[in-house]
Image 1 (cartoon, rainbow, N blue to C red):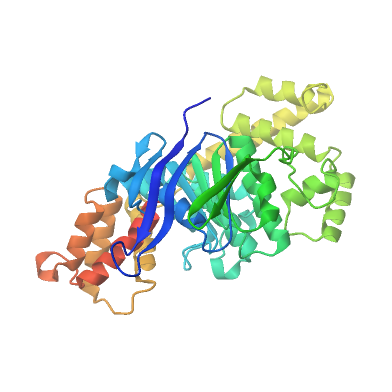
Image 2: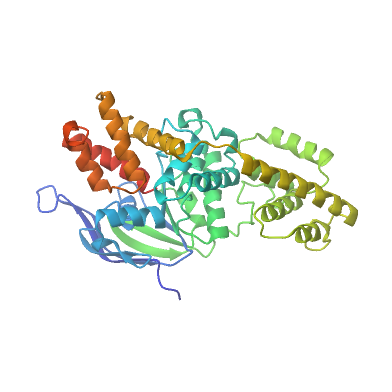
Amino acid sequence: MPEPIIKLRNVSVTYDQGKANEMRALKNINLDIYPGEYIVFFGQSGCGKSTLLYTIVGLEKATDGEVIVDGKNLSTMVKSELVEFYRSTIGMIFQAFYLVSHLSARDNLILSKMFSGAEKKEREDKAQELMDRFGITSYANRRPSMMSGGQQQRTAIARSLMNDPAIILADEPVGNLDSKNALIVLDLLADIHRKEKKTIIQVTHNAADIHYADRVFYIKDGEIEKVVKNEKKEDLVEGVGRVETRDPNSEFNRLALLHPNLSDTRLRAKMIFRHLLVPYSVSVEEGVELTIEKYIKDEITKEDLQKYLDDQKDGAGLNTQRASHLTKEIIEIVDNWKKLSVQDTTTSSNEKLKEEVFSVRMYLLEEYGGTLTKPQVESLDTLIRDLIMKEIDINKFVTMLDLPLKKGGIGLNIRTARHFGERISVIMSK
C-alpha cells in the first residue's frame, strides 16, 4: 500500500470559537486518501463536505489537528508557503466557475500560469493543448459572459490543469449545469483520472454522481459517517465515457465525446461526411493524430512515423505507397510550420510584460468602486510588474498599496490594499 497523499488526523474546524454562537463545522476528522484515487465526499447541503475540501486545500484553516498533503503539514505553513503549495500541487474546480470576466477563455488559462515562472510561449502552448483536449478552442477568444455554463466549466477544468497538479479538487462541479453538460463534465473528470492517474476529490450532494468514485465518504453533521468502497464503479471505455444508453464502442459515440455541443442530427451528418471523405475510423484518425504530434515534438523520427502509418497490426494500416506519400506530406508541412514559428515576429519581452501587467490591473480594478489617478495607475502597474518578476512578495505588494504616493506607494486605504492583495493571491495560486 503506497503512502497516503492526503492525511487528516483529528481535524476539527470551529467557527466563532469561544463565543455564544460557536459552531463546529468539522469534528475530529481522520482519513487517508491514496495517490490516484477518485474520492467523492457525499452529503446534504450544510453537512461540512465543502469545508472538509477547503481544509484539505488550505483555504480553510483547521482549528485542531493536522492536515498533511503530499508530505507537507499545512497546519504549520505560513500564507506564502500555502500559496506556493496551492499553485503547484492543487487544481481547484468550483461550482461557480470563477473565471475572470473581462478575459477570454484562453487568457483565463494563461493568467493562471503567469506566476509560475513559465515563459509566455510555454504558457500559450499549454493553454492551447488543454483547449484542444477539452474541445474549447472554437471559443478561445470569448469572454465568460459569451459562453454557456458547460463551456465555462470545461474552461475551468482546463485552467485547473495548467500547472499539472497532482490533486484535483472539485466542489459541486456540475451544480450549475443541465443534465447533458453535467454528464460531459463528469466524464471529463473521469477521463483525467483514468489517463493521468491524478487524485481527484469531488464534493456532491447528488447520489447519481458517486458511481465515478473508488471510495465514497458519507458526511453528516461535520463527521465522516461511513466510507464505502465502490465495488460497482463503472468500467468506462477509454476515450469514450458514459453517454446515456448509446453503445459506448460506436463511432457515433466517439464523435459525441469529441463534439459535445453538437445535436444528434448534426453528429449524424458529421459521421456521414467523414465516411464520404475520410476512409478511416475515428480511432485510426486519433492514432494518426497522436503519432503526428509525437513527430512534431521530436519524440519519434520520420522513419517511426512512416512505420506507424504502414503497420497493419498496431498502426494505421495504410498501404506502403500511401504511407510513404503521407509521411512526405506531413514532414513538409511540419518543416514549414517550424520555419514560420522561428520567423514569427512576436512582441518584445517588455511588450509581453506590459500585456500581463494590464490583465492583472484590470482584474484588480474589476470590483473597485473608486477612481485612480494617472500616477496611481502607473505606480500600481510598477508594483504588479515587480510582483510578476518576483522582485517583491505579496506582503510587500500590500504594504506599498497602503503607502502614500510621495513615499512610492499608491495611497489606497489599508482595507482596499488588503482586498487587492487577496484578489491577486487568488490568481497567483491558480
